[in-house]
Image 1 (tube, rainbow, N blue to C red):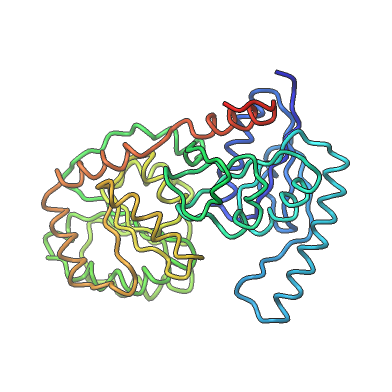
Image 2: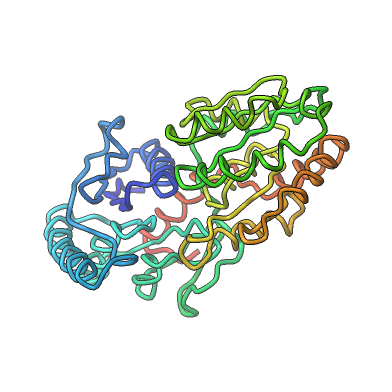
Length: 363
């Protein structure tokens, strides 16, 4: 196979960036040239000097005032002209869009120039950015087996969600039933606030003897840390760690007996790859309620319990946690069910698909 020039494009959020980085790494190993195009905030490949990065104008239209929408639309149009010029200069063999509004100008321009486009959709509902450009795509590669709102005429292929190498390194970490109970709670900046305010109500309802077994590691926004510590002041946990950000997530996931988190595709994929049971509370403001759709896939497979924010009940959650802690075999079964959904070579699969399309094949 001849060396290809492949453009990757997405926004700056981790849910889009991590898959892009993983696929870029897989393609670089095959000696192909990778170029990244993003908006002015994207620095995803600053630690990968072999990937050249270009920035262009782009801004989300959703969730803004009428004037804000007009400004954003103008920036997307200007960004498309920038992307058109860049692509004409770069002459890529193929463009991969990983979603996010920042991907729209590059993907749209590629389609106008007749450059093959492959989209990767991380969620169980096709994202709005991908939805905007999907009709002209050669293929939509998906993280979940079934994805809603993909145009009927566009082929799909289930490749899985590419994940970071450090997570893959703990993919087969055994799920050990121990006397202690490692509870990991994280949810990003927005999710952490809800968890800091609501989850202590449930945890403090647990029997004191159960709390003595719990090693609690919880994410909290810096402004919420002090209040959260006060809520747990008399909890009597075996150990309590509260931080705004965790740099050792692979270690924490592999040690966890239960994860409480949001329903983003990145979170769920890491839970599946490591194989850990979860309580998922989807972010209700996520576009098209896609986090709920994501989480239901894991719940239907027996790997998680899904609770919507509007249905959150501290007493009920405390009862569920009590049962889990007292019946570790249930958690072991959930862990196995979650791990069954994992596709550990997703980045490699995606790379193979992309190169096949770039070659003009139709496998």
